[in-house]
Image 1 (cartoon, rainbow, N blue to C red):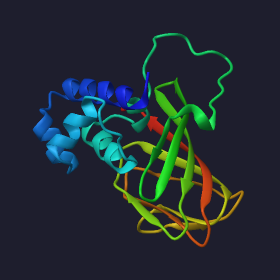
Image 2 (cartoon, rainbow, N blue to C red; image 1 turned 90 degrees about the horizontal axis):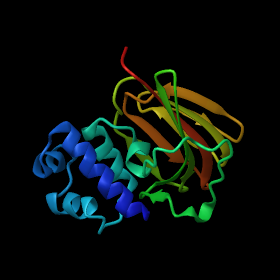
Image 3 (cartoon, rainbow, N blue to C red; image 1 turned 60 degrees about the vertical axis):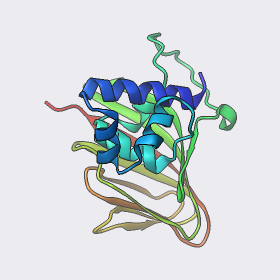
Length: 187
């Protein structure tokens, strides 16, 4: 199924699950009601920033909005190509969901991350108990809690609390990384 259709169906389902109206969801996410309506209808491509805002309001992991659930057991080998069409672009950051794993009360989402040179993105806090883990492959990234970000180069790794506002900033050249988001269920 096409990504915009998957996102639309998942947005509608998450909003219904939370018992939120279209207007209230749009207001909380600080987006237009018409924009949300078009997203839910699968007629508009979402930006990464918009989907993060909606995932936060709907209290679902970003990956939950991106994948059509088939109900099938996962195959032991998974191949995701760059041409799969599952990239999400923002003004600063592009991501591609590579995999989701559910185990022991946790959900892991693995993303390919690309941050444009000279750009800075501040991600609003995710729900509590979200841990972000990032391994830089190329470029230099300033990343981590907005109050105390770290500067990382190729081969450097960071783990931080995604439940606080955090930053992604590429310095002189584009940067690439692998991002693992770990959602720990409430006990």
